[in-house]
Image 1 (tube, rainbow, N blue to C red):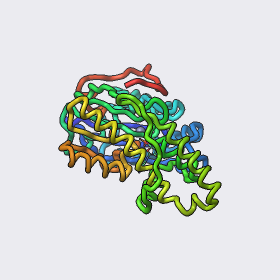
Image 2: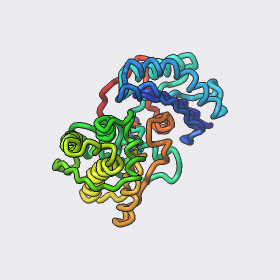
Image 3: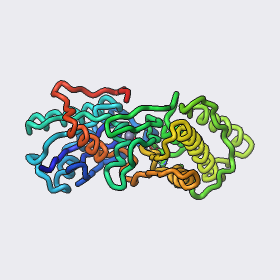
Image 4: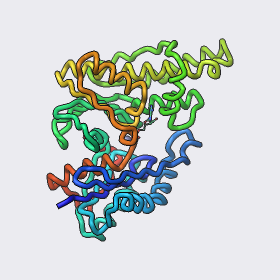
Amino acid sequence: MQINILAIESSCDDTSAAVIQDGEVLSNCVANQEAHRLYGGVVPEVASRAHQANIIPVVDLALKKAGVRKEELHAIGFTKGPGLIGSLMVGVSFAKGMALSLAIPLIEVHHMRAHVLAHFAEAPHPSFPFLCLTVSGGHTQIVRINNYLDMEILGQTIDDAAGEAFDKTGKILGLEYPAGPIIDKLAQQGEAKFAFSEPKIPGLDFSFSGLKTGILYFLKKQVKEQPNFLEEEMPNICASVQDRIVSILMNKLKLAVKQTGIQTVAIAGGVSANSGLRRALQQTGEELGWQTFIPKFEYCTDNAAMIGVTAYYKYLEGQFSDQGVAPVARWNM
Ligand code: KG4
Ligand code: ZN
């Protein structure tokens, strides 16, 4: 029998729905919310309202694209957390209502675990155990993956996430939200000629808040001496910022490989779309003999396909939720 799963992701500012058949992606639809650009960050209340407006059309589209009728679904997977509570509430409530009306099981999914399992949306798949650097707008973690449902955090950020470092620096530079992709683009026209210091954090943990402050003071000083500094040096500033964020991430990843002896290494999450990080992982992998896994762009940023793939492996293990399930803003892996 084929197992069809509808998946819903609504943890932050994108509403997404996907249909997964036997672990393969049949459709993956994302409605991006443009409204937040104006505010320099995600406004939770605005996000919840947009999810409410988007969720039915996005689910409808995902089913149509997949060629699957709702009566042919076997389960509904949804992001339970972590994320913005109002946003999560829209996806969770929708999933509960739909599962109840179709009399099919519900499967709760952890958003960060799903980012890792996005690597199983398409072949080739990493073999177990592997390491994954998961870098998003809210998290930065090095995870050891023993099996689909068996993961262990080896290190994580003690303050800002890598995506936040991009976004907050972008705000200082006067760029729109989310600034990560904009900095990436500008960096490609620049040269990393400014040196920002690397934080000294022991072990496999990260810190990015000092970098943001360092950049702020550096810019203040430079603009005082050269009022057009920002306009003239923007691509070089972006290249320097990106270079430092990437080197912080890569140095910890190298340490994790050394400590664990695991040489199968993946990246995941929104920041894994970054061209500098993708290049660095590939180059380091070639130099050090690692087997590396870099997701397709559509599986880097938030998407429901990764939720569906995770739900599929939970389905196989019979891990279902009941109608009492509620979203959680903070949720340890
Ligand atoms: O995983 P994601 O879509 O949402 C969360 O779960 O947070 O990650 C969003 C983050 C944002 O901080 C965004 O600026 C960053 O990913 N991002 C990038 C790039 N594309 C998205 N950062 C750097 N370079 C990119 N190309
Ligand atoms: Zn995410």
